Amino acid sequence: MTAGGLVVGLTGGTGHIGGLLLRRLLDDPAVAEVRSVARRPLPAATGGLAPARLTHTTEDLRTPAAREALRGVDVLFHLGAQVWQGRSRAGLQEMYGVNVEGTRNVVLAHPGAVVLVSSASVYGAWPANPLPMDEAHDPRPNAECPYAVHKLVAERTCVQEAGRWTVVRLAAVLGAHADARVARAVRGYHLAVPAMTGAAQAVQWLDEADAVEGLLRTGHALASGAGGGVAGEVVNLATTDWLGAQDVARIAGSRVVELPRPALIKASELGRRLGVTPFGADRAVLVAGPLALSIDKATKVLGWQPAKNSAQVLAAALERGWRGLPRNRAL
Image (cartoon, rainbow, N blue to C red; front, side, top):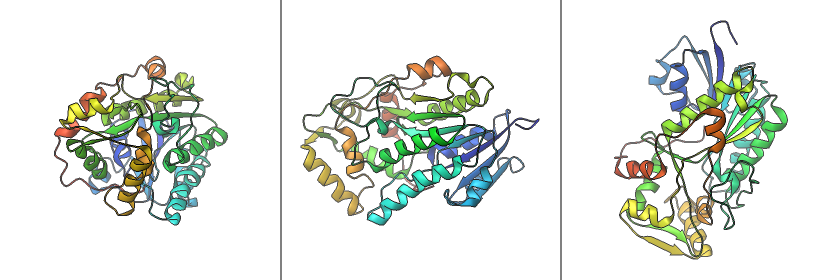
C-alpha cells in the first residue's frame, strides 16, 4: 500500500460488472491507483475519469505483460473471463485458456490479496439441491456448462497459488449496463419461459449495483490487516428471494413452455450453433434443478444486503429499453 492508499489491480474492466467496479474504484478515496488489464482498450469515457490514477494495459490475461502489469498490487479483483462458449473445439480450448490459464498467470503476479469473482453456476443445477445453498455445499458444476467447470478450476488455482484470497460466487447479474445478448434473452421471457419437464427451478437475479457494492466490501475487508472475516473464504452474493418458472412467467406476462431435458438441451445447442442465441446447452442445463444461494455469510462478515430482490431486478429488466447496447466480448 502506498502512503496515499491502496494500489488495486483489476481484470475485466471492459465488461459489464468490471466496468462498473472500475468506476467505483476510481471514486474511492481509499484507492490511490488502479492498474487495469483486459484484452480490449477501455472506453474513452472511462480513461478520462482519473487519468493520473488509472493505468490500463491492453493484453491477453495469459501473457507475461499482463502479469507484470499487475505485479505487487495490494489487492487484485479478478473478473476477466470468457463467458460465452465458442462454436468449435478450438473455441472451447480458447475459453479454457482464458479462464484457467489466465487466472493462474495473473495470480502469479503475487498481489497482496486476490478477490476471485466466480459464479453460482459452480454449484450446478441438480434436483436434490437445497434451498438456499450456502458455501459449505460441495460445488458440482454441470458438465454441459464449461464456464462453470472452468470457474471451479480457477477457484482451486487461486486457493493453491494465492497467498491471501477470497472467492465470491455471484448469482446472475442484471442491470442497465448488461450485455446485449443477456438483455435479448431476458426480453424473450415476454414470449415464453423455457423449463425442463419434471425439474424444479429456482433462479436469482442480482442487481448490478448490489453486486459491485458486495465486491468492493470484500476487497476492502480482504485488504485490511485482519482480513475482515473473508480471508480464505468463499462468499455468496445473491438475493434473498428466488424465482421459479411460473414466477418468471407471471412477471413477464407470458407462459411456461416445458420440454423434456433432451429436447431442451438439443434445441438450445442448435440455436447456439446457428448463432441465434449465445445460450446453448451450457445455460439451458442451469434450469435442471434449483440454483439459489444463501447470503447469510455475506451479511455476517461484510454487513452486505442487496437493495433489490430478484423479482424487482427481473421486472426492471423486462421494462427497460435495451436497443443499442454493446455486445461484450471475451475480456
